[in-house]
Image 1 (cartoon, rainbow, N blue to C red):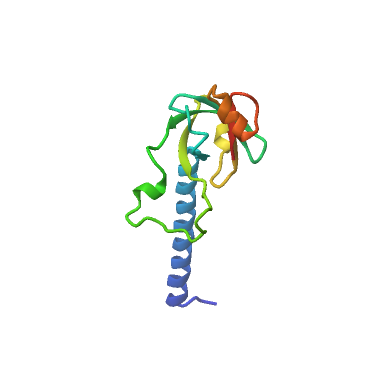
Image 2 (spheres, rainbow, N blue to C red):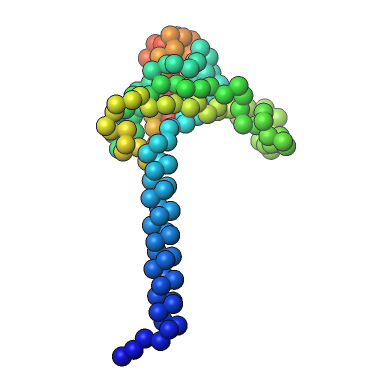
Length: 146
């Protein structure tokens, strides 16, 4: 039974589409393995936090890798928006602002390659500020972000 030319072209296009999808997935995996976690800290937690702090990262899958604070932003995302958000939460409700802190993974960690996009990360930072820890109800001098 012979195939018509139309069937051959359709089959070739489907194979090409599958190849493109596979190539896109592989390139996405490359981006994930070279990524870095961004942790959202509350404003009180950022008191005394700067670049260079060593941070243990506990992943969703109970993996522990070490990281280093790379950068702390100068303000929240709302400060840099062209149109400021107006939350309709009432006059006396305060919304906790969270700032994204970039954490770079420490080198030479074989478990770091298992980090995937969307994983939850729990971090603990030793800032040496006991008043912040008292507010967060954690051990003296440490703060935790989820």
